[in-house]
Structure formats: structure tokens, C-alpha cells
Image (cartoon, rainbow, N blue to C red; front, side, top):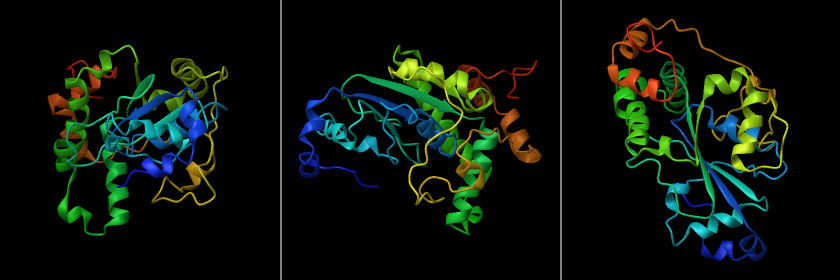
Length: 253
């Protein structure tokens, strides 16, 4: 993973450097809806629509380069966590910023993540299983965020994927206001990144390419995974912190 801009390429856009910019960082595990969220926000004329940006590579001395990525006054940057990534998220200190903590129920997240990696590596399931994905990836991602108390900061908003796709117009209207966009009306449609939108870059499925938000709850028919999630108190603790409802035994639903 490389920086999309460096010192010399940034100097090609002096006008962008002089303009006031604010930043929105989308923080999440993979396959939690960050591509959808970014594309929904890009409906606003004053919000950027960039590919995934490894913002963790920019320190305080190089973060100014991010201003040159777009002419838009609000620059949205998303970079989900990766397995074995430490200290996620590393958000650069640059300008006014808002942070969107995006979470999706771990059942759908792990199933979708497994499908993604299987498509890239046919031997994936010989190296990983759902238990590894939970303990070595999903839990460290969200427990790490909570441990840093990001959810308590005034410039942070928690977004549950399920709520976003169930009431997209209402939800995006609130998000536009939160990030400081001039866009007032919410949306249930979103922008396509480019005509070369592919699975390996974003997600080229027919559902995604419809450019309209659709609820896509997966059938929860993997009893082994369900039991793993329901019987792990750490999962329930994370979900409760993010506003999910628990059952009468305080277990993840």
C-alpha cells in the first residue's frame, strides 16, 4: 500500500493547498460498508469521492498532502483495518476533522470478509477460520477503538451499518449536517466511483452497481459461527458499546 500523493505531486496543486479543507475519516473493519458510506456522502456537491486512501501513512509533517487529493472542501477518506494492523486507526493531524466509526454485526462482517479473501486466495480457508478472524481481526479492531475512547470525542459519530441501510435518507441527512456539508436532503442512491469499478477495487456486484441502497441481511444459517459470537462476552461488550441490542442474557443478538 502506497501513498496516493507525495511532496512533489502535491505541489502540482497549489490552489488546493490554499483552500480551506475539512476531513472526514471513516474507521471500520473490512466489509462493514465503508465503500457504500463513502459513496453516499459523495452525493453532496461539496464532498469528495476518492478511492481508498491509506491515511495512516501520513504523519503530521506530510498530512498536508491530503489537501491536494480533491478540489472539494470536504475530503472523505476511508481505510478499513487489516489483519495484524497495530494501533488502528492512525489518523493524521490535519485541519478540522470528523471521524465516522462504522460497524456492522460481526456475523455478516466475518462471512463477507471470508468470501472476499476466498475470491483472492483459493487456499484462504486452509489458513484461517471464523475463530481466527474474530479473535485476531474483528475484536482487536473494535476493542482497540474503544480502548482509545474515540467514541467519546465530540467530533466522532457512531454509525451502525444496519441502521444506515434501513433508513438511508434519514441517516444521511443527519450525516451531511454532522460533517458540515451544505447538502440538506438525505439520499438512498450513491455515486459510482468510475466505470472501471471492480470487485478488487470496490465492489462490482449487481446489487452495488444498482447505485441504490438495499438492505442485504445474510441468512444466519452458520450455527457454529452464531454460537461463537453469542458465547463470547467480548463480542457482546463491543456491540453494546456501539448501540446494538442484546438479548435478555446480555448476549449478542
